[in-house]
Amino acid sequence: MSLSRASVLCAALIVAIALGALRARAAPLDGFDPPGPLPELVYRIETDKPVYQLGEEVHITHRAMNLGDADVTIRFTCEPGFRFDVVTAGERVEPWLWVLSARVWSLTLSPGESYESEWTWDMADSDGNPVLPGTYDILGLSHGTPVMPVGASSPDDPVTSITIVPEPAMVGLLSLGFGILLRRRKDQFDVPSLPGVLEGPARRQAVGD
Image (cartoon, rainbow, N blue to C red; front, top):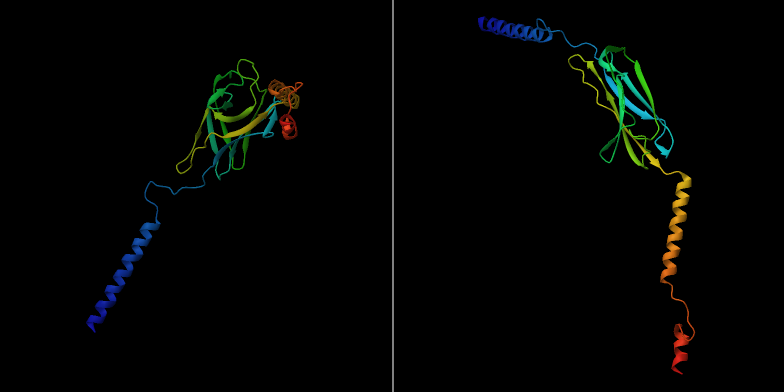
């Protein structure tokens, strides 16, 4: 009988220790607050279309969006806060020299809110010369630092690509010039027919007679 009581007491003690451990794990530590709602700041850049003819204007839109559940603040040290660069074949093509004015300002985005910056690129480099047809990467850059709480990640710089093709008139001229070149090369290698020169199997037989 005493052994049975001891077994019951031992089992009760084990259960009490286990419950105490569970409560300790569930309770927050002193000075530590469990993470609450977090912001999710995302940068995106896009153009009005993916393919352009040479000489067209490229309309660019940069968006800073908060897709999370808490406010997020971006602190800037100059104006404008966002800009873009154009890169092709690993080389940077500056649309123009950016004029930045030193000014400290901040932007706060609530959940679901976004901030847009719009630009127009005339397909010219920093010297005013038109670029050549090809593929170009448009990079979105920020002069601000987001204030992100612990557990939230900072956004990456966005990038998008466009293709610039020659104008139809230019394509027609190139095709015409290529056709003329082929005809000239053909004329250079053509052998004119001369009197007394017989060609073909039937004429070779006539020569042997």
